[in-house]
Length: 325
Image (cartoon, rainbow, N blue to C red; front, side):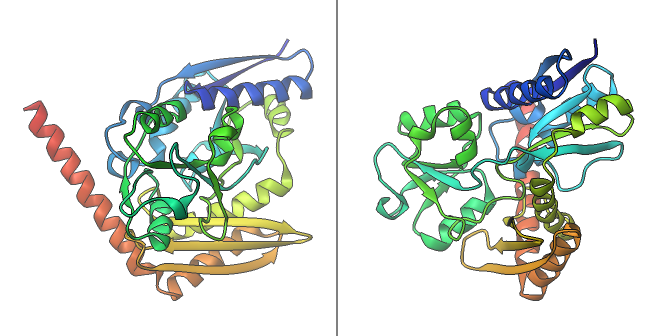
């Protein structure tokens, strides 16, 4: 009997996603044995600062990738939006699919929607992308970093630490928490992150061909093309989680239609472009959109965001040094 071991973070959402993929693999290859290897990553441990201060999305995947290199796991399952735009050497995304609701969601215990939040309301989000678009609509809001798994964040909201949170609708849906959603923010008002709502399976380029073929059966070509288009924007701009960047692609027949956005951290400016092209060349569409963003003035916004991230990282490192000393 063949066996596939899935490396996964141990949050409730990550485990749900890994179990979901495990069930799909069992359906694809009846009789195959699939087990989970739960792990705690640096991203799960360093919760006191936004990801842009402590190293970015890669903190969620390095330990999982090491488990693959060590032979303890064959594949890793991720929320695609949590992956860096460029995969590290020796790894590939062998399957992307199962895309759920791509929208952001407002969650509040007191208020019915974003418009009803009072002046100066405290909104929890650690996403610079979400923050820029929220402030573009409501510059009066006070944004505050919130990290931890979905349950932890909701607990902080329920304790009164925030007036509202903005989270991914897909994660709430998958955890059976759709009832907590106060308002779905439209794609027009809150353009999603690249890959939002989709699941991706990562493996080593050296995975045995037979196992790779089984896992590749999970791939959804339509979703994969759209996600590749979105991720190509980030890759072309050299962007990571320190950048307030959004990208969303949809397939319309043989054409992929892409929207991409870069925002000022304070929401004072949003640069947004739309491009389309043949679905047979998704990466090119993302690259063209990246060029259009730069031509429209996104360069200074990206540079300012990078400088601010570097400043915060330096301040965070200095604080840790002072504390340890």
